[in-house]
Length: 196
Image (cartoon, rainbow, N blue to C red; front, side):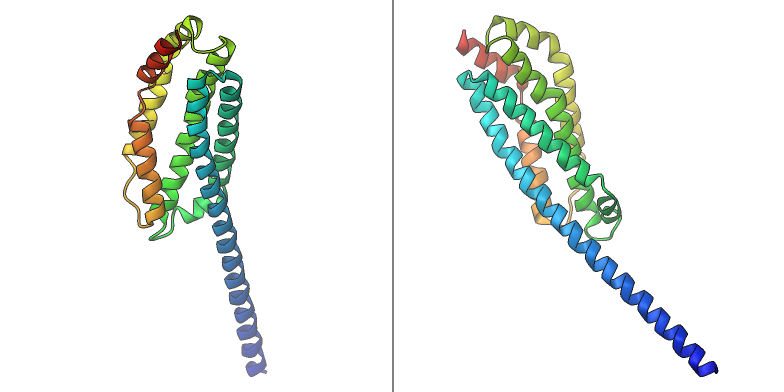
């Protein structure tokens, strides 16, 4: 009787371990798919930022506003994904935790910049009909808020620690370079002066 009981307990323990292994594998695969999706979205955003700059410089204000809105929607999607339970758990894991947390922070910074800088600037220029005195006046009124958002992003990205995964480290470096090279007021002033 004792032998059968031990056998049933052992079998139940093995089934539980097997279920846990399958659940971990499924969660790992789901996390991998989400990470690939975020990576693809990040690449799309980088391309759209280039497009946005070109649209503003060429005077395509409607296109710039649409591109900024698209960047904002993608950034929100990325942030929503990286706020999920799998990402929260993965950010606590050894070896990859720092990289996962860095990716989460990058998506948060991108979301904030798109909502607080890109969309307002593109909308302001679009509503004024282009880079002109009206848009320059509106943008100068917003400049302290825009600069504060950019400085906050710079500070956040500059404080990110080095991770273990080169792809994430490269993304952090690209973001740091892009944000630290951004002088919005100087860039816009040059564009507005050339447009006038």
